[in-house]
Length: 442
Image 1 (tube, rainbow, N blue to C red):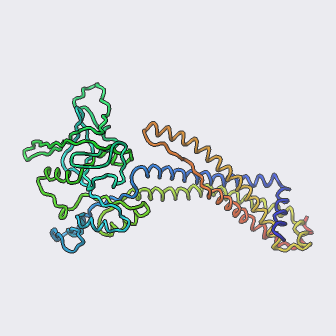
Image 2: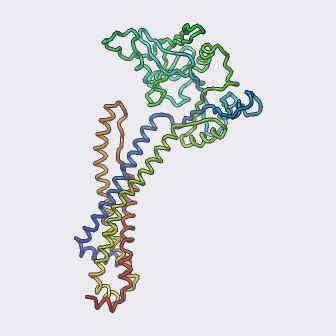
């Protein structure tokens, strides 16, 4: 039997039983539409989460810290042939020689040490006083860390600083009276501010050290810790820490607190992270969180798709029942087909084609219905989530339910497969009928 003749017969046979075929196909429609909606919802949630995470930080940035092992025994060993890494037992410190090893890793574009201020610090501007994270970085341009400015530039010097987007929000009037309205956040760009560092002597007396600095740049909002940070040159923070601790700091011996390693592309971030940990250091990156989120939503897609597939299983039983009843009703027709020359293969192909046709009709309708309901749900969810984001001061999502092109194609092909699988046993029964007995069937 030619393929076109088979298609014609399948279409004619299904057309003769429109009501039964429609009722059976509705089960497939429900199952496939459920799969499309639930999987699309999981994909949309994953995309929304990734959008939020990609805005939190630079995914090409790796935070590297020294590894302090518990190995005991020996004292501090300096220098030597350990690749520049200072060791105490299993301890790996971020010395200058270790930084050179990090720079030698392929696809690393920058290795920048970062130090915390060990003294108490606050910022004053006119009558206002604010508190913020203060970091010293080993670069004269924060663009090397992937940071961008919304005002001014990102260049650092001994007399200038760059502040985060939210730093100005943390200023207050220390002399504000109860019930008095707080002052608005100051515009600190291109203004002179005072960095006040404080320490205590042996008698508990406070000693302060002031630096007058000009704000040459305000960073663009990134959703990361940079929004709440003030950046200084590394040598300035080193001198402050030496003043606070009354000791001379030698980075070749004690190492840096933290080093920021930037990859040329986020695709290389995890590979570089693994090489750094293999060297004995601690390393983490925002991409670890993104991967964890993606793994969670991949599992969620499978779970939700499985829930929708249960409805498809019920529909498959309906297809099998419909085909079995159809064979009983058409037993004499099958016998007549065989009597005039139809082979077992022709009969098998015909009934498998009819079962696949029911799956195709239901899958096509389910894919279209699932996509349409997904779009409606997407609009409603975006409006609701946008209202929630506006109330909480967050970023509104761009998508809540997303249906990729491959999903309707997949569910359509799967529904056809389910239809053929459900009709396999009835079709085999029809193909194996004896023509004489089939013609005698009443």
